[in-house]
Image (cartoon, rainbow, N blue to C red; front, side, top):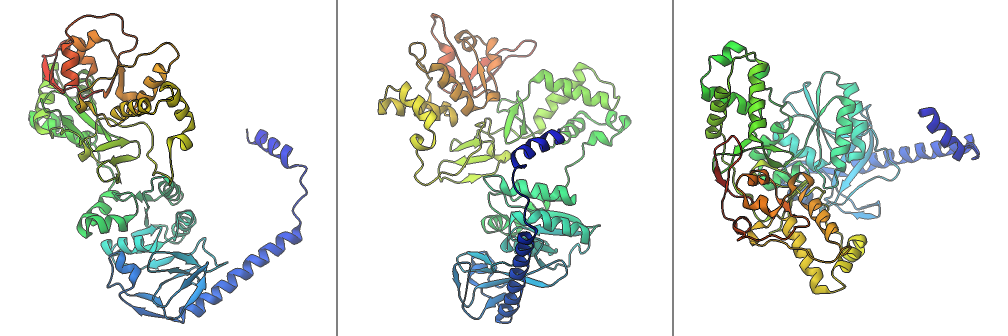
Length: 512
């Protein structure tokens, strides 16, 4: 309870002497004096700026014609020597008084004046569109300028994610009727998203994340104006309501089978696809296309009929589902160069990292977040526990370590197209089970299943393997046979599947 927590804190800090009021007052006075000095310096430096276009930093960000304030003198601040032509962004408090400046060099270095107020300050780009109805808050000046350019709406510059919360709260007090949108940065660490979400909660606003890792200016320079403008408005568009929230039973019953199938497709957010054989349905969720068990999906469709109190039968449901399979997109094969993580996909061809997209057609994700490599990073120094297991399992032999790492990469990247299967042998305690657990972690718990060789060989039992990327065959007993199913699956060939109560069909099982 809070009282218990307070008691424990008091037990630790109770012996500490109380803060000296004189020391506290002196610190407050020192802070206030530093703010006044920074505000006075901001006034002085602003008098030594000029309006102009062609700023080097803004040119690099895609706005060579944007008029801005630039220094006309040299100045040293924050350990940087600022030169004539560097960008100056004036910062105002909630009363409209100039209290600080942000200086931005041609190469993107940014500093505010020493001791100057930052919390609760901002620079505002005034817009005409949606005036009084919608207000944007962005982290950086280039991001704000991009949003302002593409929407024509008012944008407040927060300078950093740390200032988002206080600025959002001030904006809500000043503009109680406005929709507030946080044009957040999409960071690999998730820091920008987390702070923007907290700010949005505080002001009852919404968060608009760019379709790339970085900020909205990165999206603008990568995709161009029209595509980024569409992405901005898509990001703030409220989720579409299910047609089953507004339809009546009479309307639904009067529809043709194809119309009913379309309403069901819309109910699922148009996030359904069918495999190349037109049999298995998949739904896009959290970056991955997951196979929908046919019986479960049929029950869900029946539930939609019941929701409207519309009459149905198993034949009607099956007819709608079969028609739906003819309407929705056909699932494509995922690109072999992409590896899926919880927070995005890594393109192994060029080393870039991208947010999730349905068009990636990912079927599996590694159940960890991707983080950028650290300079000088090695397994031995940055993953010592894993390295100790790897070295022990390999008996200290470098070539065997490479084989184990290649096997784990095969699981991580779902390289079933290597047309190999992994056989791990060794005495008890040699690390076989640990390797299986690591492989499961890399594939994702939901993407792994256990089976036997008989499961691979039997068309009836093979139905349980569809939708998985890792098939584990633990502790196999002695077995004899031609292994046709095993060879077909590892060879990338189509195999027959004969599920109970359904017609048999042929499909690929893209699993390691």
